[in-house]
Length: 246
Image 1 (tube, one colour):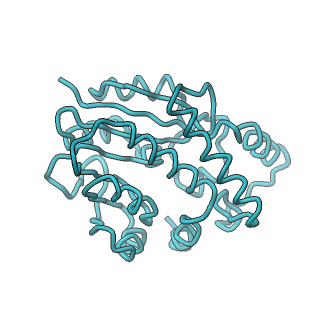
Image 2 (cartoon, rainbow, N blue to C red):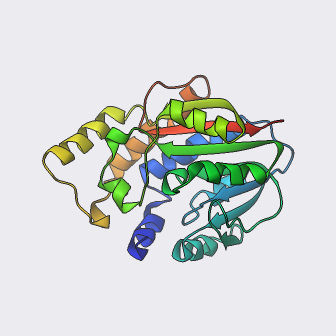
């Protein structure tokens, strides 16, 4: 992926509403899990490392990343030693984990089932997998192209994929639901009027004004209180919790 993309990604990851909201949702999801004291946690595909500090509050964190530039930026955070690695065939760790987190990574991988099988092999019996992916192919946009996505998912198909990979799915839901109508409208209009651009600066990670960013951060993050109680029927993304069982 373009080096400039990772530099921009790293510059906004701490404050952009989408990253802030997703981190808050993932944080609460982890808090709801039954994990051992000081669990071993792996983030597979950590990007520039914006989630590492949050994950470190929950246990001992290991992390891997495919891209050398992103890996170097992640290591500058000095949370853990991020290793170069890829799915499904190059996981640079041999130990087994209580929790593996793979956030908006699965859509980048040609063989997503093989990737899930590889992650399952690195989980302890009873260990958890937390997955987020983008939802709905009709929301495909230049953002997906810039990010080198292979696909977007629907909830039922993702459930089936996890089960075929040997996981027991305990919870699955769409999220980024409140903003779904706006995202769908904007992406639809861009396609209709051919306003899409290959520019990294014009991608969905551009930082809005402070008041707008603050409002969107609070709105998106507030969904965590709903997600802790029930599944949402639609959204821009999907979150799923699965377990390695007998």
